[in-house]
Image: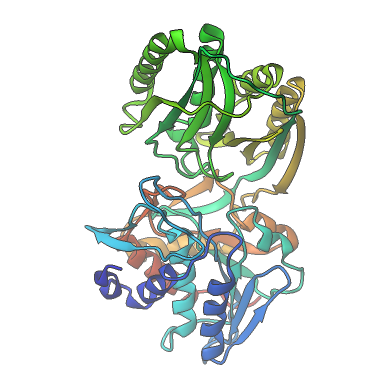
Length: 489
């Protein structure tokens, strides 16, 4: 832990962020962070609730003279994305995050930092603790498992919240106010097959292929940046390997999370020993091709091959070919921009996970869109691609987008406050990533919402970092918003 973090401004926020970094909180393992947050609420004598969906709700009364203001919900999610470089051994269920100051940034050591959404929930805790801030009635909503499916927001029961305005703290660019976001759906694909006995021929060898060194990143925030998808490019090579060298696929593993662009992939194939030299040349040629195509973006990419132990089994040839062809054919990346806002991604897909195991292949794709019809259209296209290959396809985890409200009272207030706080105008944006606002808004029609936050670069990857100066700006804007919330009508 870098001791400089405790002296950063605003100290009330960084104090909590430092503590949160010591608490393991990957999605699905939130008992300790839940206990920490509830402990803060109870120590302040505030009404503290742990609901059936795993969310924590803490209510703080208005300060004297502010009782007539519209009640506000401050919202952030408790979980973080667990991603680490292969060079380190890090158990996200037990090991703390090791943040450090690097110039005007705080980053972690070889892992995701968890500033998404750790800074947001730290700021909410700081608001709850503050004794001199003026504000109306507050509800702090800390949601469960946002990163893996927004399950906390989905499980939030109507009537649990009483606020009229929601301030979401989960966006990641200083100077931008978000008024809408995309919805999403998981496309789950599986191939099942009967294991076949495999006896290697005397002239067969096995080769492990490794593609890595990629940036990865958030499949919503970073999808338009042209970053390489490790799964997509590995299967591009596998198709060539099968065609040119009659390679057989033994095993495959690529990607770890549905909402992270896959940074690494590994495949084990068998080839004839006599083809080894030519095969290695093909690997080197493909590595050169990737560097030519992506090197200006993925400066650290590598694609390597090494001989390894012969496997115990191979994928049946028909299954292997169907899998390769389907993945080469399936769409990945930006699908369409918003027609009347051509600089904003409307629809995209992320080929996030491909894994083989005995008799089973799993493929996961996350489709996002601000258009419900285009979301369904792309999901259907992917379903057709894999169904034609003989796979079973189903959809899961669908969540709605957040429709823009140009008459939003909180949006217009924040637009007015922003230059007063920062000296510059705010940009009003529509986000391609998913926010819980869409789900919460569906349960609470008429809720006036906005999302804002400090600058966080490369979330969902070990390169994640948060800009220190923008955390202070974010805090000042949050405080100003609470002090200027309009009165009840």
